[in-house]
Image (cartoon, rainbow, N blue to C red; front, side, top):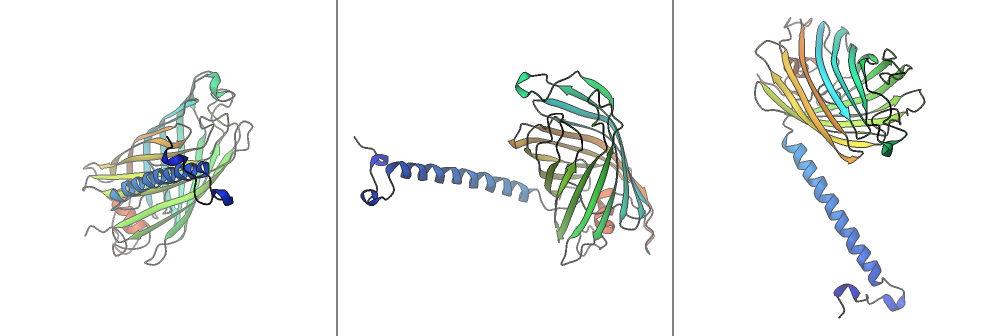
Length: 326
């Protein structure tokens, strides 16, 4: 008995589609439907959490283009974990400091301690090999420059150039052994209560067994209450080389947020993510954040809360275009 998929199309005798072509067309249509369904679910997930302030950066991998305001400071103590089946690379304790030293320019430094835990699984050769080690890893210096301020009709745009200094031991796998660089551009736009943050960067690593690679991310956020904000991002990177844990490209969805303590400017930052495409990868962040400083503008108002201050002052506009909680 013939099935419906055995019946030739009317054009078969004249060189038209065969039943094989028909089957392939059905399979392609089904694959397209599955992709559209997944894309729709991802879109709805992002939109559902996105009645937002647009501050990115820690605890997420996507950053924002807005420097710390002049005369203000940020300090973090944190730990992270980023791993693949080839290697696990936890970091902590790590210490970050940001300073609004010049109008529209933020100076940045991270002093990290961490570990390298290769799997030594021959499946991932030549990556993921070597002994476990713990110690100082490569120190990070950088500056963020907000060169276009957000207005009602244009986004905030800025760069965040970072220099990774070879302070970690290359022989133990704790450092690259040469200075390396991150060169991203980040964009942010707010639409009333909505805010979108995203960008693209390029990492330059002049060392054997490492690769230069592209990376990028997109983040949305929602204020749940006066004490809690939740966010999610999609972050993707190309393969980073066999000496890194990320031996192949990967795309992750990370979710987390910020808990505001009673102490002004003090927050708990947390995030966790897992790959949805490419190499299996996990990402996690847990840290404490503190901001302080005095406004040098006409109002003379001190910053008492990182997210509130950032959104209403650091972008160069008031609550008319920001989230606004007046």
